Length: 586
Image (tube, rainbow, N blue to C red; front, side, top):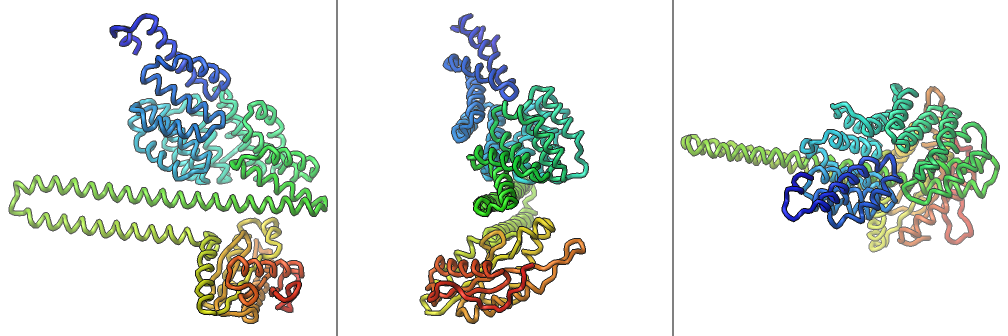
């Protein structure tokens, strides 16, 4: 490039020297941007003074590095805008490819999964057009990172296995780090301490101290999940000072959250509370959901241990709120994944149709010579296209029905989710109001469900939720509308029923649940639920009022000892019991 510039008329030796200096600084800034952020910032400040005389190729690389600087400084919306503008403007396939990689990274960081899939498709489609092996590998590494963030570790490992050339430098560090992260998510027995040590050591050797610290954070979480609380604590204390020095707040907060949990598991409640409070006070960003949830759960257990009821309730409410947010995020991931699969199927179908059309064109050329056979072949291929279109339409409608079902139903229990239950209930209550027909609402919540999860594990807890719903479905009338409105909280709308009839239905469900025996590794146990009932005679046909009254009645059932049914009475100061059963909850 420099030789060409020197050969061009009107380019002075001084101008050529400026171009050469800019080119060298751009390459240096690109090389040190992750390993030496201070030097990177200095080089970018120097390059800003020369931006007006950049060649188009230098200008593209400068714009790319400037977008990276915005992302590093935490200005994510501005960084996304800068990368997207560069992606649309540049004709340089390598810069365009790198911009797509960065966008996938940022969208994963911001939990914008559908936008990430758009650029991930571009990466896979154009990888072979990128001559630089290192950048091609970065594409697969970003794909693995994206899938890890979506909690799809199998897909992440599959992306890493597609790297055929031997990786070096930062790419090798990332490859090893992403692999141990995926295996840790799977709790793979193949994963060992040596794997973490090798990945972290490789990152340090190549000056990627921050990536090495992130790997150590994943190792600490893995050890804690395996029940090695002391080991997790030792790892964090060894690397927490370096994490603080990196000024990467998310890493420090994650380490503090894991450390607080490790201290709690060792019974060191006072220390656990101090560390968890540090993590909470620093976790203002919504991206810190997981460590923030862990910290509030630790603070709840500490307050519970200290018999501090007010603090325990505060942190329990915070934990429930964060769990709901986590549930919504997981639902968004699932929907994005399903839509991505649907788009891939649609694209494959379009490609198949194009292939068929190309075959028809080739056949038409042959038919110009073979006139005698033209009509027969045209009919055959026309029928094939029509058949393929029918198949495509059938598949598209089937996928749409599946997506609609996923958007309306709870993935664990199969019943209506909160959003769809509310929609359906509003519609049904409006219809009943016009017909002047009564309706009742039942709200029930599983008793001591957290103890079930803590004692028997979350998998067994999921089985209890499914069993509870099966018990109810056996006792509910066909016209009942059942939905999951919270973690272990459910609601039933019974059209045409007063509280007297609805109470009998609720009692039947309660008794069936209480009589059901569960088995966890040959340890039998029972579970129960508390029920609240209200009807339109007291609440009117307004959904919010009706479910609020039923909810208040359910909390009265909790206060009354659980495993019972309470009916909201609008004329009295409190609710009254509709069931004589007051057995101890399971």
